[in-house]
Length: 314
Picture (spheres, rainbow, N blue to C red):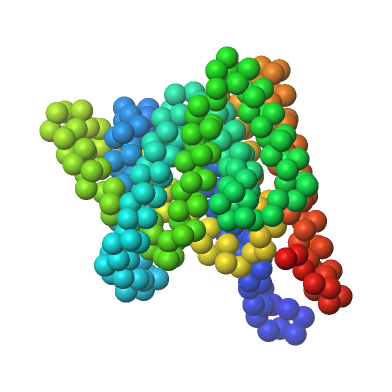
């Protein structure tokens, strides 16, 4: 396409970053539709985890090579303290991945949705607790609404929403650790997959030796299980690229896309959705709305202060 002067139009970097961010969270939201076919070809959560580790390592290695981050990988591998932190983050993300895969293959997609709605609100609470970050009045209200939603979800299920809470806590703790690790997202993911891959590969080899593996059952099985690589690495690539170019308030809004899509998938697939469960999600949605409003309001206030020369918050 050309402009009125006939010169080729240049891509809008802001629009490209927004599209990348939307694509990232849409892919994360649609990921149950990738993991469920893996379950339908016979693979359980642990076999799928093995494939995530192995195929994820291959894709992450390609990403590191493309980004020319080999030097950073060597540095991380030579620093015991950094490697130790990444070992802990690997354990947390492995728990998160395995539980998510199990949940979406066992009729708990709505619970995964609740967990990822809670995640940004839990991040805000952890930021205040661990990093002395200030929580606005809107943030406190959002956290209170989310807590009410979790309590109502427990009443609706007749038990604590263990899947939701474990997903939210494990991913929030993972984020806290990765905040402390001096490594880019691509390098960190590669090292995490590198730490997981030997266990995943050993498990897959053992399964095949026992006749319990499924990757060679059919072309369909091979295709879906190999998709564990791109669905693990692809969204992260888009996120890492977009997050450096988008305002924090925009990222805060986009992160609610994924659980909303997963929520729609769970309802469409007929998971139980009582009126009490609907009320619990309403509290979560209102809390998310208050959170987004408080982020937007704070950003607008800081912008006005910068333009008028007023001092910002301490």
